Structure formats: structure tokens, C-alpha cells
Figure (cartoon, helix red, strand yellow):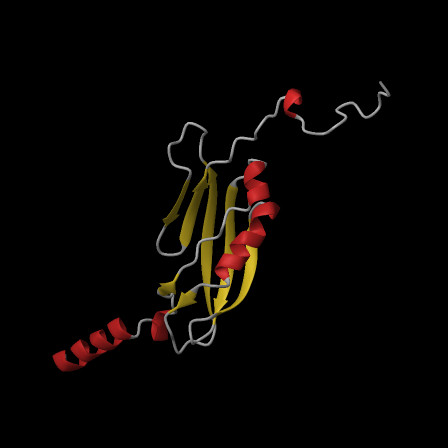
Length: 151
């Protein structure tokens, strides 16, 4: 067997694997984490949103489709996914599945917010909701605290 032919074929396959086997996951150049929506966080909504992005040969995200996830978290995931950039490739249409996990931290947590990149294509966004403030009725600055009474 011709060792030069085997060696050159092996090098070619290592340099351009996507030409023969399909590209399983293009290399990420820029990954953007979603922001935890404030209203969703206040409502203690959490979960995983999975999206599928179609990537152009230049590495730009062409389209985003939500595969699953809580409706109140989807928009944040889609907005972040549109900003991802991938390595260039001669392949016309590549798809990548991105996973964004929204986690609510317990009130006892010393960390208020934390974002973790989970390679190759995911983020975990951890946030602690703010504790609602409670005002005493005596602190009410309105001139007439009882608008129904005439006294």
C-alpha cells in the first residue's frame, strides 16, 4: 500500500472533515448568553430552551427555530442565538442546536448572578430574584390613605 497516499488522505480528512462526514458542530467564534427576563425571573420561571440555528458559509446565523422551552424564556434565547458566530465553512447549510438553561438561585445564595458557558453550544444563566420590598401602611405618603372615607 502506498504510505504517501494514505498519509496525504489522512491529513486531508483531518483538515477538512466536514467535506466527507458532514459537520456535526461548527466551531463557535462568538457565543452570546441570553439575559434572564426580569418579569420571568420575578415570577420564578425557569427551564431549558433549545433552539436550532441555521448557519451560513460565512458563519452567520441565518435563522433560529425554537425546538422546546418555556414560552416566557424563548424570546431571550432567540435574541441571544441570533448573535452567535461560527467558523467559516464551504458547506452551504449547517445547523447547530443551542441549549440555554435558565436557573433560579436560592435566596440563601451569596451569588446574585452567574453565567456559565457550557461548550460546545450552551449556556446556563443563574440568577437570584430580588426580594420584593414590603412597605408599612404608615409609610404611605398619599394625603388621604382612605379615599373612600369622608372623615
